[in-house]
Image (tube, rainbow, N blue to C red; front, side, top):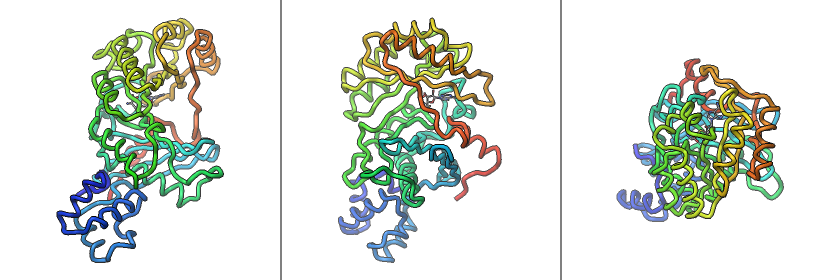
Length: 357
Ligand code: SAH
């Protein structure tokens, strides 16, 4: 079965041509796919063609197998099922400027960060470009089908994307690049790359490659420490790339793209959250066009790490601000619908509720 979802219009046109189908059919199919419609719903195609397509290709490689909607803030947590029975998580968040969808790039992860639930069983496989797009298509359909609230003048669809679900995007480099380019297709989902954030634990050589791609996404770097000693305690990748090399790659990204880098910093009790850590962090980031996003640790049951108090978060933030570092704390959303970072998938797998289609 050929997955058509991950094809550019030019590729789909070639695929249709090989089957002696006229060019305009490719465009019709492409539009439908990017609207999240399956072959059966492609009403301007002859029935016989829809049947033929059903037999040899896939239009929608992802489906929602589980969803939970927060009663507090309309956040929706999805479990997306893939065709081979694997599943990944996504989260849809409603902000005043529109909907932001957090998507996964791999089933599991092999980066091994000690605070993260996604990596506990390693990486099963990388997602294809079509599957990543499929997550977006599912969320778009969900917004429309469930008549989720939209602000006046806004269209009912995903406006912003963050690649912060399970997986390391730069460990699935080629597929992620193709996915980002698919977002730019004229008849596609209309998400500007300036509204996309790619989050990495810091695979330095790939960060240099990304800076050359001419894809103006925001680069988020999971830093989580003010120095190598602390970083190595929680992030194995820090053993491969020391922090000064990582920060050099960030500077290069800013120079090449003109976009500031976002540093994610999860505050872990007793590890990286003291005032002296904030001071050290500020000194490392001085002169770098960046923003720090503080995340109070989301405690993972399987891991022996502690969260922090509200007072600790505030003190850390005030110290950074006092040293002229631009900083915000991540808003916690959907608190009532299951912890983030791979926890819903684990819970569902444990309950034996796998994706089977
Ligand atoms: N692999 C990429 C993207 C996925 S993780 C990366 O490392 O950036 C998305 C973000 O969630 C990262 O900043 C990650 O460090 C953070 N994260 C993972 N587990 C967490 C937890 N238990 N509490 C808070 N943040 C967590």
